[in-house]
Image 1 (cartoon, rainbow, N blue to C red):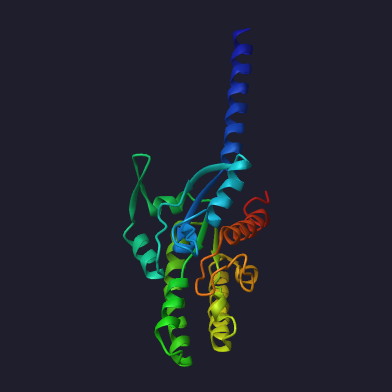
Image 2: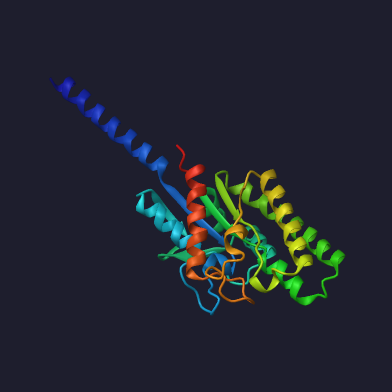
Length: 244
């Protein structure tokens, strides 16, 4: 009788443990990285809901959110800034506990990334648009992106999604700038494929849409714009991370 009771108890414990492991494996540790766009900066100053917030809510509503970290995001960030943060293993405090960026990347099931817009717009706004100069700058940007992707993949083996570059409304009629952005996005797409990073084309939903980009001289989206990016990210993770 005691043996039977012990056996039943062991089976219950094993079943409970297996259910726990199965549930744990389905939870999503979500790390958001990037610049002002990742933070949700609005066209009118300040910050609102970002695309990361919409994606976090979607995952949370499915009861599969293990943890969400967006504290490494910094406004006006450039690619080299994020590289330095990873190399230096930047540390922050979350709920009175230390959290390093390398540890977050190791644990992450999902990383979203917006980086490079500041690099690109800075060059366009501070030069006379000499074609060779801009192309050289984009090539240098991609060298930095290569270094960043290597670092990300060193620590994160799971899904990484990077947003591509898009033009603010005041730049849409400039053919040279269109070519620069096409060149940068083509390079970024190839580099993403090389490192098995998901490339998300948000330019196609934002450009030529005044509801999403209400100020011609700002590339920061409205709340509607951020929500549209969030929905596109939701579609992407349903095609990738959440397929099983």
